[in-house]
Amino acid sequence: MAGLASATSLLYVASYAGTLTTLVFTTDATTGQSSLQTVATVSGCGNASWLTLDHPNRTLYCLDEAIHAPDSTLFRFRTNRNGTLTPLDQVAVPNGAVSSVIYGLAGKELAIASYEGGAISTYNIASSPPTHLHTSTFHLPHPGPNPDHRQDAPHPHQAITDLTGRFLFVPDLGADLVRVWAINSETLELTPAPSLVVTPPGSGPRHGVFLQSGKKTFFYLLCELANTIIVYQVSYETDGMLEFAQVYVTGTHGEDGTVPRGAAAAEIIISPCTQYLIISSRLEGTSSDPLITFAINHDTGVITHHSTVPAGGLTPRHFSLNNAGTLVAVGLQGSGRVAIFPRDTDTGVIGDVPLAFVDGLGEVTAVVFGGAGYVEELEEDRIQELR
Image 1: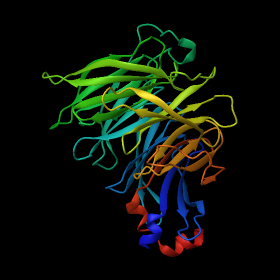
Image 2 (image 1 turned 30 degrees about the horizontal axis):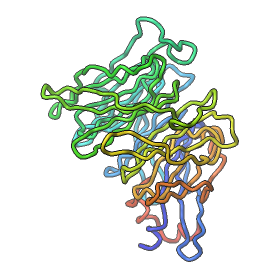
Image 3 (image 1 turned 180 degrees about the vertical axis):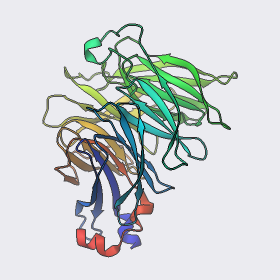
Image 4 (image 1 turned 90 degrees about the vertical axis):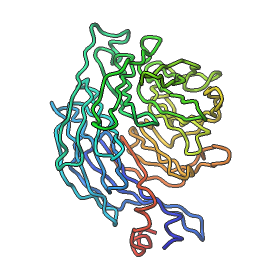
């Protein structure tokens, strides 16, 4: 079974169709042939928009964005050894929930960004169902520079923590801000800190990611409306607050690249080796939207275009890497597909042909790897059956 586990990955997929799908990706050690098969499906997460996996506690959190309803819902599932998901409980959350993150050293709190509701809310997930702690709702004094392109109101699009776990960050696409809170290490209460003002106006910050390089901390912000990546150096001040210095900005296709009219940047991650930054772009008017890789200069934080490959279909809203950085799983909302690509960890190059893919998943919104712990416990006969 150890040999099988090394060549097998489990994935969870969310779709606006309201289904959560468990997939197993397997590469035959003898033939080298890869397959991607469905292990299980479960309904009950409405317009599923985001997945947060609590691997140590074998729990999967799913956000129902509730596109046509007044409230969203946080659903909790137990992840089972055979890949199935068991519903546990649920709690109502502000409308338009699109991203969540677990925070606190004990991992007992969850923060949710609600796009349509213009809010950030927090919950104690140690209780069943999760207990609401606090909600902050935001307002704009006047519409932003792109009111017809989603800057008519605040639209928080992501909730993440910095690498110290001491701060919560929420990129607000509608307000051209990254909202920041300091996290009390003992009480876990959130205290508002000065926001990062994103310029130029109309940038539309969507998602961000942090990098630690020696004693330096960099924050990479992907702006959906401007289709840019902005690099900031983050300083931790003696008063406990943060300072941001913009060090670089580039288009999503690099300095010498051209962004197609109507394109919309989607997801941003840093490779496990921290040498590469990868983004996805949607609505580019081609048969396949791209995944775009940048090389990172660890001294300056500056990124340089490295390579561009097809994402395997349309609208790669979300993608993720396995822990080894050897596989890229892409959720293609416009194609109803999940595609798995190989990635060379030495060169950072993503293959331009998928190893395997599954269609018919509806509008895929998120795909996350389950981790080796799940794979090792899949029954050997089930793996053989799927082959």
